[in-house]
Image (tube, rainbow, N blue to C red; front, side, top):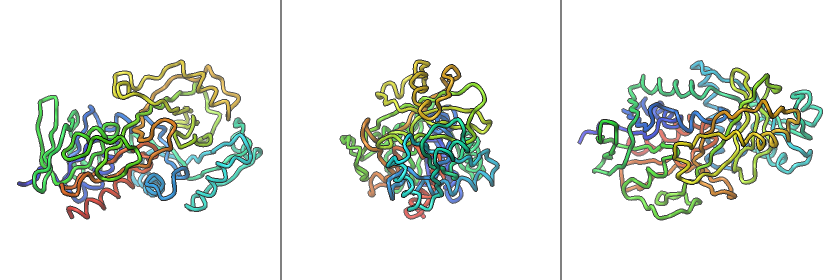
Length: 386
């Protein structure tokens, strides 16, 4: 049987679009997205930060793909006129001898990432409104217009022949000889396509899609397992953002020290490309019903005092009345509350089937890592289908 496409990518967030751009140079590519448009969920609901790669466990996918992704993303933005700015960021500490400062400095040295220690006087010179005993200055950190980034990825993929079809939900897939038969539900009814390989980049739905596919063990909830026969459990976590009305007192990004276990990077101050200040995200674990329900992106104004308390730890001059509920996003976490963060999981289901790769738990630094993840998938696919 002749395949309809070489590759079917499920999910048109930033990861799916980056993979589509990469693969469409050599393969015929179909992208299936269940929403009305590409990039409208997790990929458009984040801090829009290009991370340097300092926070992640040594040798982890998060570390290696973040660093490689950063190295690819800045030139990509320059080449294709994607709005971005290498703002740099301050990682601030309430104490001058906090052990996390030393750990981050050692990580930066190991990875050859520029990072500079600042005392309280140097902090005041850089950001007069920031109160901290010490800080680390990361000049490689920046911001990006994530929407234009995704539009560029989509445009380049489509120029190379990729086809994006929205309002199309993949409900299952079955191996048929050397091909996959992919079942799709659309407003016009069900249909199916045959392809040589499937890439599951469905974000929050990636684990449920993996469970729906043929020949996978769906009975484990072990989140530490990274083998190709186990399905991890999803722990969706909402992060809220508040905007700040008025002129920003900051010229750079300002981050507290990361939370224990890397549950999050703390409620930090980021800027958009127009200079508008916003704060977030916090971490609120959700049950499955809420995470996929109609109010999943709600931001309660009642969170304002909680945000204000966290922000005043490094900006005591905050006027709480200028904080306004803005937006929220949901991270597809693989770690339970109180547990250390789990690495990205990029795994093949079953070597006896045609190629099918699952991308699970792609939370931060997913935006920074997108182009590097696309490179990795291309290498894995080329090794199997040429």
